Amino acid sequence: DWLKKFLAYGKSTLQRTERPRVSLLQRSPSSPVVCHATGFYPNRVVVFWRRDGQELHEQVDPGEVLPNHDGTFQVSVDLDLTAVPQEDWERYECVVQLKGIEDISTPLDPALIRTNGGDKSHILAFILTGVAVLAVVAAAVVGVFLYRERNVY
Image 1: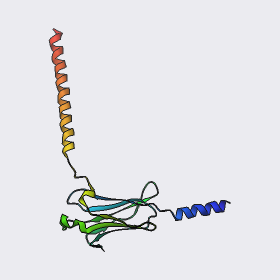
Image 2 (image 1 turned 180 degrees about the horizontal axis):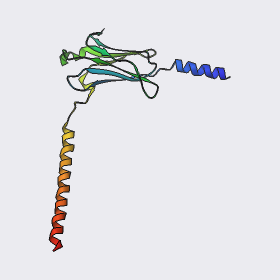
Image 3 (image 1 turned 60 degrees about the horizontal axis):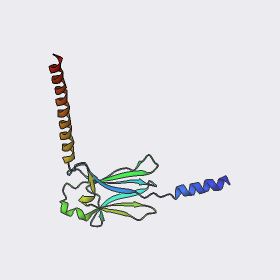
Image 4 (image 1 turned 120 degrees about the vertical axis):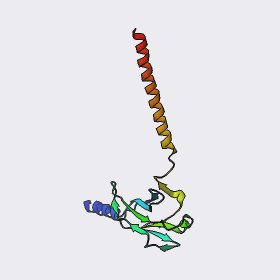
């Protein structure tokens, strides 16, 4: 009976497939675009960039497959676009191949790229709000001291 349980567990582990989540990332407009696949299982995955349906080998920096804390895996593949005009980006796509699932193709669309270089206006608003709060607190402290000075005598 224990042998059947052990075999069933081994079979479910060997046949386990977790579909990856694919994101396009870019630190700044001048940095490479990263195709990041995470949450997949097993770790035998192929991730590559294509242009006009052809796999790219130049301009590409493949990363190694790394473990996640939950037993799944992640990998990133960088694409250097410094010499590619943005109007040609539609010709590019990131492809993730994992046994047991259909290929995942993510087009290189600026609207899909998550970046750190977004709108900075919210940061300016926080700074200005902080300065205003400090000014009000400082004025209140000065007001309290002046009030005490006048009422001491």
